[in-house]
Image (cartoon, rainbow, N blue to C red; front, side, top):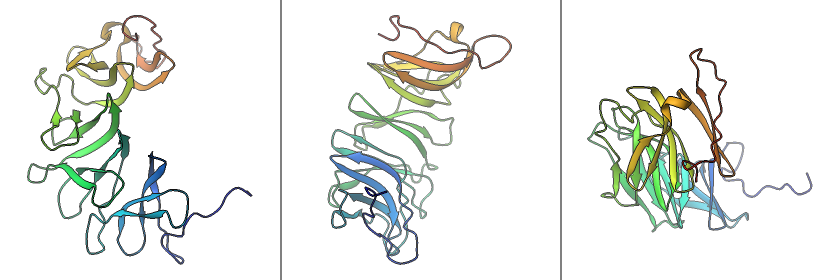
Amino acid sequence: LGGVQLVKDINYGSADSSPSLFESMGGELFFTADDGISGMELWKSDGTNSGTMIVSNIAANGSSSWPGEKVAISGELFFTVDDVNNPGMALWKSDGTNAGTSLVRNWFGQGGMHISELTSFEGELYFVGDDGNPPRLWKSNGSWGGTELLHANLGPYEGDYVGDLTPMGDKLYFSAYSESHGEVLWSYHSGSQEKVDAGILGNGVRFLTVSGDKLFLVSNADTTGQLTYHWENPGPIIA
């Protein structure tokens, strides 16, 4: 352990700062921590004691904003905030400075929002948003007006219950509901959302994983419901 050393005791003394939810951007590490004064807030570190500091105290008076999932996109860190004074989550972004940390959008007064699976795809943020409807696919360009629900009118629950966001090439793959097949593989590309080989792959799609130029997944591809199928397709869907 000769190469292992303490970077900084953030919550000095016997208390725990509970650092978690790490994301790298611009040669610095961003994370959530509690210094015993500001509550759970956004921090960053360049690997030195003096370079480890709070980025922004979003929730004032010692309460916590609970920064959650984080993803870096083109020099901006997107992350979720869960304000105990308001229902649901809000979406924030930061350039790594206090002045450059700002709200992207919230859904307060609209029943709240649960945000998960923050994913970078083609220079923009994609995520799963649950605003009281089934979880659906959203995207954001970092502005309030540019944070929007995609394809809300495909049909009753069609394309809903989104999960496993997985970028590969020029497509964003994910699992979602289809009225005719159940939970199947979908792709999003150039504003279009569509099912991918639902009749072949079957339903129960999950565990999407990219290896090289291939997408692997598990599905119920036969009538027995056994998880015995993985997909390896070098054809035009993957190109």
